[in-house]
Image (cartoon, rainbow, N blue to C red; front, side, top):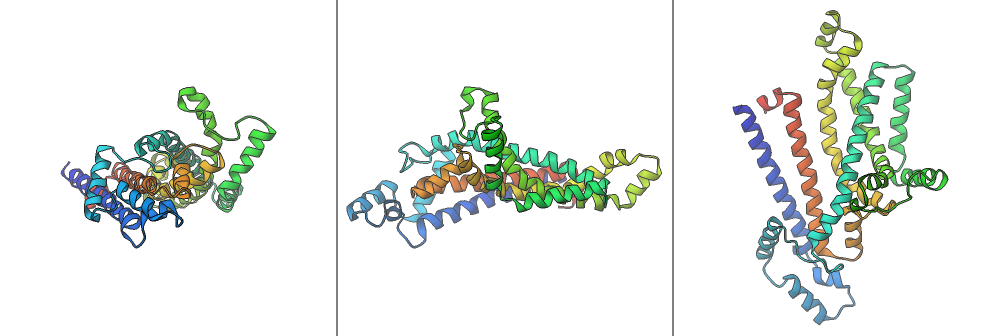
Length: 318
């Protein structure tokens, strides 16, 4: 228990320091480095009086340390200010969009993981056979196809040709769970393709490596079938590198939502930040970028905890 407590304390401290560091980088980039945020938001043709009024409204006339402390305090209270473009609280904007982006990102990760683990084990069990070659061909195809092109292909097939799913848009969870879930099927599949292509290779390699270990040969010598050995002994040991890559890939998932949400016209965080950058709404950009960074750090924190569950030796020797 003491080892686990120390492990959790170290990981929690690392989590907090990383989020704090991300907040400093975001603040310095958008408000302190050379350039006038108010002029950036209004454009170079704006009058000096309009720029001065916006600087005062945003508090840019105050010292940077004071502005940073106020920003962090507002984040902790859930008060993120008002969007310059939409004229509504940023908290409300982000809250509405997270209802789309989080199910999209989590759904893509779950689908990619299930598909990749199943195919990776199948490929390893049929090493250098037709099944292995087929899985590797799928992986190569998934890596080569751009996700936005794959999304457009799914729209053409399942929306225009077969009329199974809608081409885009999101009705909202208030319209019904299954209706809203159906609207996310094509985006989730699109986002999951590239992830599954990477994870299936990692899973296959990890399973093949574990299968060469002495304790696997011992398990087979004791009479365990090949399938029982795979599921009882190989899979758990092979999951550690897979979980590692999953944590790292979550950043790519969040970045991928920006493209996918625009392809499928989904009102998510990705589309919000794309619109905020286009409209030079730095208030929204600052908060959303920090939110995405915090989400990625949180997922990696959870991955660290999963390490300790999968392999207790990690927390003992950390």
